[in-house]
Length: 288
Image 1: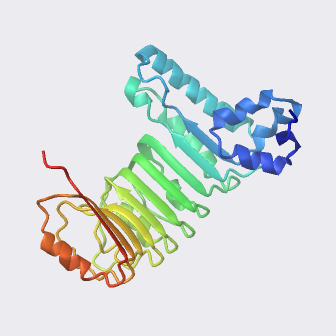
Image 2 (image 1 turned 90 degrees about the horizontal axis):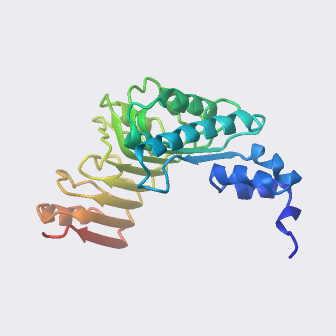
Image 3 (image 1 turned 90 degrees about the vertical axis):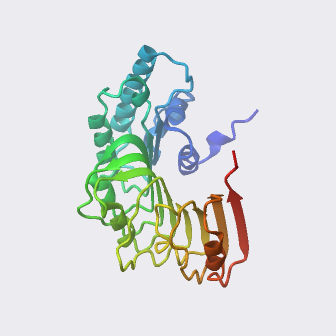
């Protein structure tokens, strides 16, 4: 059988490789002389340290995590730094399962600094780290997609995300009430917002997110003031106190995990404030 894929140009091969986990990308170096150094020019970084064997014992888990640290360091050291790094995804949580005191923070911070260096020009940043994060993440002017999971935010003294379009926050904890609110207020091009297990508190006059069109949020902790102008809204409501916003642009609404303790009269009043609504889906909690 003819080797058709090797006839592709380097640009096409690099584009294909950019969708693979980094370990698989590096593994292609054994295919032939042409592939030997090709991986060094891939513009994406995708490392996940969680083992496939969930029954792995403590010592083997610690050894696997050590190998993971070395693998990431080796990749970042050997890749062609003249090439941009457009997408950076890092899931680094297994140390919590084996030894919460295992040293890793310095390595993670160094990796993120490399990803956010001026030469990298990262556009897509996806972090799941179970630790506190550097404030420099919020000053990356090239970011279009930012996804944060299991992360603590100590301080956001300055935020500059001028081209950010997609923001996902899942179990992100801010140690100052205003921190995460700043993310929305200074993201003028934000179009998609997901916020779960994350506390966002809008100021009295919230003027951010003028281009927001889609949101998936927990209504108990995210004020509807933030999402009142979207076209598509997925929201979980259990104890939402104030539903009476004018959703002038809303076309699709999905209410998830609706509690039987919620005031359904308020829900009906809310629907009366959705003049363009075309699709409605309601999911209720099961009664035990």
